[in-house]
Length: 326
Image (cartoon, rainbow, N blue to C red):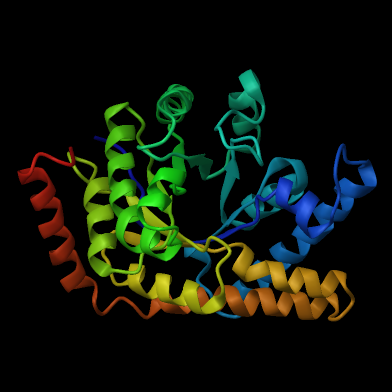
């Protein structure tokens, strides 16, 4: 199976659209040209922070940005010219069901920017709405076939939010869900999507607290000839301490090739800058510092990886011997 991307990947995602409009800027409804320009300017601050991190020592050949066409077209083009890896979202922003941002024109937009990765964000719980999951799966299969047929890399951001009945069984304890139920649901989701013919090169997934859960996720991602498929950990807007813990756990597991930490990197500096509590240069510097902090966690993790590879291999063989998750 000729899929996968298993090189280190340190991604700064700022493809947020709806959350920028409504939560960072407090705007509702259609955007004016001036509003669009303001959001684009804020995203330029993030991009400058990314570039400052590279100048400060973060490895350029492992660094990447994820930004949208709507507010970041100029940044995507500049990053490609500068030799950075790029990723661009395909999904509509701010809705629970995956659909194409540009409808039937999705391929034309991808070809126009030619990003290193095409990314989707999908909310999928295998115990959730079956009809919803089926609709999403059909669209995702179409995208997967197009991307691999055109030689493009597919990045899949998976969010497995708790269903009300699942939380009820756990007495409303979201931490218990994250620790004990979500990792198993994530593995089930990978199996279901793979069985439907959806083949990401990189899985972008929520953090997990236990090494074993990370190893099981990699085993699912790499089963049945998918040995080069990579996983990256996302930040989910958590605080610095939680993100550091998630990154430290994932970075010790062979198959987790990097991270995609967005809001924890840039949100607070942007809020402070927009409130005139810090100047633009300070916001750029703080974004660069935070991104380098995440990079350092992964760069320092090379030592434990041989043992991690052995454990991940054991997990993969265990899944195969058990016939996968049923």
